[in-house]
Length: 254
Image 1: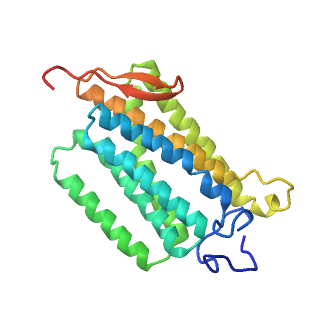
Image 2: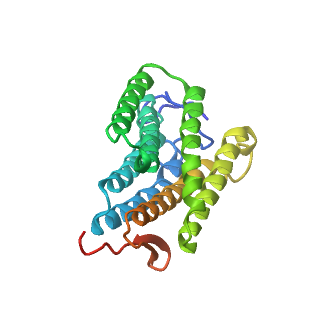
């Protein structure tokens, strides 16, 4: 939804969403799409603190940090609607999926140095290509393929998990990504109709909120499964009676 007047950031050069630009501030293009990312940052921070406090493997600290980096990049994109900031949102999305791929598949990978080397080179090559070539549909197809590649292992972990609380995390992950995707599609496909409504449900902002929780639930479930693989006797506890987190008890030798 391009606006006729320029803003603090100049004319729009990126993809836009179904929210009127610069309604609440001359410094924030899409206000709700920007502030709706804050819950995801806070949830990633909670996950990072838990990973560090209980000394989980470094991969999980990196995962939570990557969630925060992606969220900050997305905030800058929606606040400015500039092409460079859009790349700062989309490239970390791919990097994050490569990290999920590593966490999911590396425990069974016999050649330990091959996978991280390949994923690093793939991520670097994508970043360079994405900086040089603009491909909106191609990016979405590529991202969906990366997500689908993670599904078989997530499903395997789910069916082999006996703990009811851990299974609930996986169900919450599925519920949030399904509902969030519907919000994303609704906002994208029916924007012309929504623009004529008195009230905009802000489907893309709802997507941000739900995906913040989605990442948190996915990370927590993966931390539980990995702790179970390592024999750390994991249990799902709750912070403030609501936020689930993994509590572990390592053997004394560790």
